[in-house]
Figure (spheres, rainbow, N blue to C red):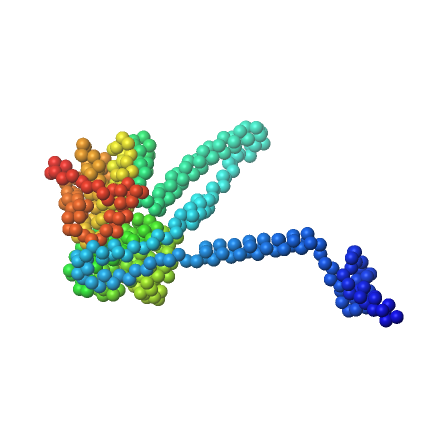
Length: 464
């Protein structure tokens, strides 16, 4: 009897050989207080195990990829201790060239998205319905409809012309924010292409710019007259480092030119200690980036690039000081402003446009940023001299100056002779300046390796 009573218990606890029904499961639960575990077939277990491993593997791969993408790339930071060393600019060649910044990821995708959004945001004005007289509509509906169609077509043609002009202006703005300093030849013959009113307006704009460069111009002797703790060599070391910073963050050339302009204008009015010179440099580049760039670097990035020598609060305080001292006058013509126009005029006189001409002229113009002695020349004179010397370097079979350049630059060849001669000495590096950031920049293939070119001797007949 005992064996018979234990048989149901053993039978219930054992794994069933067939399919279990709901009634049997409920009976077992009520009888023993548990639900028997049903073993799955071997094929189902293998499928679930493989599926689980696949999900875990995919999750691990996504986690590793996200970690690798979010991990910041190592970047070398620079403290301009050499600025405080007066004799460093002339002692060795490794003053600043030893500190090379690692390239940052190119922000071209963000720039393209910003440009596409900016262009798509332009709205086409709605076409106003043409007014029709009441009598004509009542008497002859066909004539009124034809009149409306003709008016609509005429208005569509006018709006098409307006959109074409806006597209040309937007292309000029895009060209102004290109990473490369080279200019493509798009200057064509103006006779018959430009309307007289547009030509007059452009001439008036550049006339105002030439007047503005005289008003907001740094002093050419502020080092001797005002500054006592910094020297010309320290200024050159700072600008040479800022050239590397601009390459690190892929800033447009206009930002670099405006940065140097802000530094010189501030130093023309304020005494500054050498410990604050690098702070002035990064603050001026921050202001210029906000004015010229589409995606300007943050304040923290400029602090990081100096190895956190200055805090964010110090940079913001210096920013307020610079802006208040300059009266928020940031719209100033630089050498790059005039060089863009003069290069178009130079390309017009050539049968085949030359990209090398634009690269060489930009290289010569940027060389003047480091040399303190070029502050005595106006930016328009420096731009004209760069075009003159670039044309003479590439082609000695023809005179580098003609009536077209004389018209668009407002300078004769005799007016820029002194600046051209000084620029040629700077190109040949007769003073053996060890600051080579700009020369290394223009030795790259994307700039046609124009830093390796030298110009022949200048003769007096070129300026007569």
